[in-house]
Image (cartoon, rainbow, N blue to C red):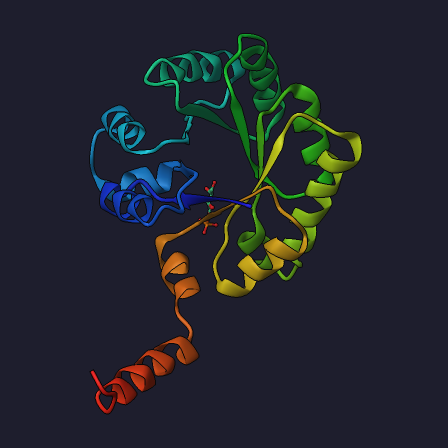
Amino acid sequence: MKIFLDTANIEEIKEVKDLGILDGVTTNPSLIAKEKKDFKKTIAAICEVVNGTVSAEVIALDWETMVKEGRELAAISEHVVVKVPFTKDGLKATSIMAAEGIDVNVTLIFSANQALLACKAGAAYISPFAGRLDDIGHDGIEVVGQCQAVVDTYDYDTEVIAASIRSTAHMLQCQEIAADIATIPYKVIEQMMKHPLTTSGIEQFLADWENAVK
Ligand code: E4P
């Protein structure tokens, strides 16, 4: 499974990259706004660090402006994947950009039916949101699994990004459903690394080492 970092924070990206576990980055308008820096310069800076794809989202809601913004974002770097929200205009923009060779990540997907339509429009990636579905009482990972099944069953040339990942439990479930990719916040990466038995095991080894013949 590929691991993407869901952030626009360059320090977090550099840190995770140095661990050797980073396959890409996803951003969204909320994450960009949090950094309080110029959007395109931020994307360019992230692209310089990451050896993988970097999703940057269009703001427009009409297909023509989506395509215009998407072309501008794609021109920043070969690493850029244009993120487009799932709407009727989003589908049209996706099919136009896909035909031009621009990789599109269709985001805000909440059902397998939306996933199917995005795949057919030529999305390189689809992002079903687990956490936001959980928030309204649904089983988010179950829906991500249904989206993954659409891609796998019909052999679409699309990768599924499990998005809106909030916990280590989500990450275990992503592995169970064999998600292609999970995009996760820095906090969840930190949580994944921790285990109390690893901590106590190290303490025990060090304590015993004190009594070893050296
Ligand atoms: C990634 O593509 C999404 O924008 C992100 O995972 C959304 O996460 P959230 O629901 O925690 O905001």
